[in-house]
Length: 88
Image 1 (cartoon, rainbow, N blue to C red):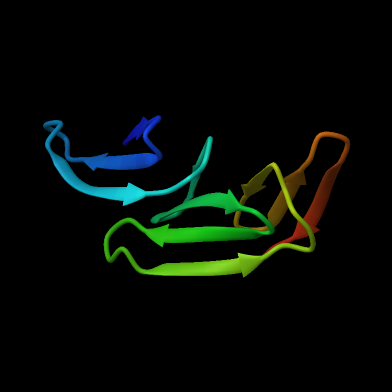
Image 2: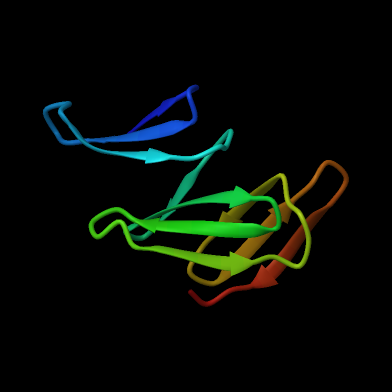
């Protein structure tokens, strides 16, 4: 994976050849299983790396960053850190 400041994430194979490009307007992203996810306003956007299928989970409020595991979701803002149960 290659994050480029032109607001895109390039998915590369093991030889460095580009497989696909995901256009996003974010500063960071992370992974949960076979999905890439990122915060977009007050939602989490998930993109399946194999099928490119997209899904969205609404957050209780706008977040600067979110960290997701198979059991928890952590929402981070400039003054707060909130912990929620999460079951994808």
